[in-house]
Image (cartoon, rainbow, N blue to C red; front, side, top):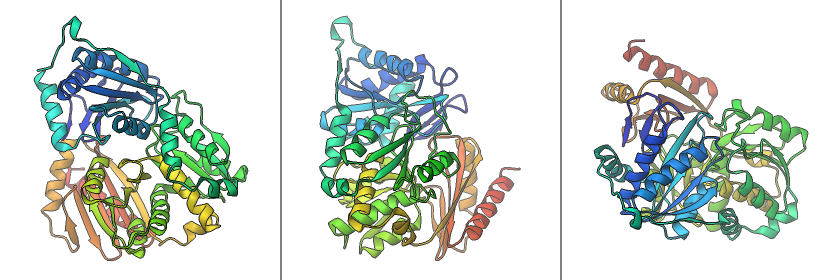
Length: 459
């Protein structure tokens, strides 16, 4: 399930439907998608939540019109983080759910993310079934006396926080009286993050925590976009800094010294603690093809087995559930703890890392310094998805002096480095990600394969 619409800024993929509001993402399109999803769910009960984007109210009302017209009962949980919504889908025993959020995309974008009854994204086959309904236009349309009501469901954030607290040693964390700098990019994670941290006895120093959807920086929680948080963490003397993307399914970490530790180490640190606490020996950890070898090394050091899937939360989540994994996630800061839910959750990541700090008695800088050293370099080349797939086919056909994996684009592995080339699920770009023991070697891999892609594309 990966295609583009008539405009290059409309992305229809395994991660949902994304577009620029007023251009490719129109009320008419959104309403039809609502009708299609309502038809797909046989007019069932649907949880709907949204993030803080300015366009969110418009998109919500359009999708509600489509769902209601198809005979669905809508459970409106309001402005919530994506992991809050996925928990509510499962715990309310709904037939599915829609989250209105473009995650890390810029403010002009919005999106619909489709979830099934277990709170996991539709997989590729399920997504194709939904798209077949959408493109055929063969929607269920109920008469006036077949329409159902919208039910407002309060306290979704409280439910989420209480569930996360139930797996943590709250008193141990409270005893450390952590000072935590927090950047939620004015997104939907503000309320749930503040509730969790304050429940853990933390003194929270917030920056960019006004949930108005006016993003103060580019939402992607990476080094370039989090320099404000790095300075703020250092200036406030915080023990740690956390950054969540606008829908709070990803978390990045800043050290007590104001150094950007990043998203990859968020997953590695949470994984290290869970495997040590619960016993990782012979357990299974699931990560995706683009996740750092840091997490793989951490898992193997604990005696755990590691299996990789294609990029995409649903791929990791389904494999975790099917194989009974003890932990998993994606290296973009997507911590996935099956004791809460097989979905990415920044709030879970924050709680586990704080407990790791409390249990170890160390600073976050000291914990990070002990992790295996790998250097990752990421790049992107703007290419429409269909063109990306064509180029990847040509690249796969070439001879390679490495272990080759073509499950998700092209991944080449050597003993001391790797590179992964794949079409994005969320943007019209090809991603080039490389990792090696030092930055120079990683950058050389990115440069080599970026040049080859451009050569194949004719410049």
